[in-house]
Image (cartoon, rainbow, N blue to C red; front, top):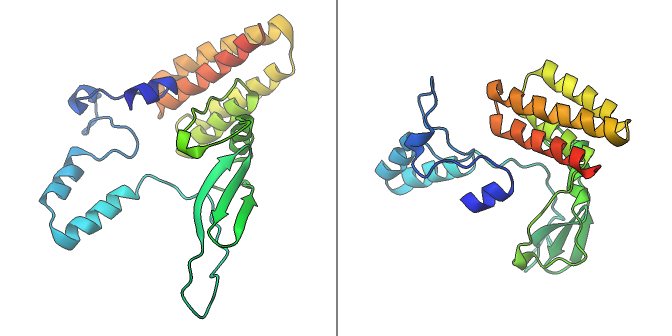
Length: 222
């Protein structure tokens, strides 16, 4: 898991959460979705249906549903084998495999849970062929859509101040209109500033990821 996180420029917690304590914090700094020591103790002490209730409560607190799709029953009068058994993201589309009725090809639309920038960034990753069982590594090439997607995520999580987010959006747009060395210089300055911004940000790891994406944009023009 640590190797997987490093490849994706994500924060890697220490194996011992006690090493992740930060000044002014009561709990260890854990990855989103990880249970605290108190929650683990609750699970350890729970039995029967109380354990089941706690386990389900803790397991669903992190994932977020961003879309929903259902064809409805194959037959409204009797039980038959049907329904979507798997959905995969493939080159900008969601491919749903239905047991009895074939494939459904869907597209995401912007909502309060996902922005157009995030959808555009997701579409950048392309595969000639996809076998989901091989679990191919997804690598996002440098793009302005990717940088803007990270900005949208920071806005949604309040991971960076609104005034600073607005300023970064404006600077990205200005840099996108430039070319050659002036464009590289502007993006390099912005990347360095963002790394500095991370120090006081609510989501330091994501701001560093944004800074790295802007830096890759600068290097892509060389």
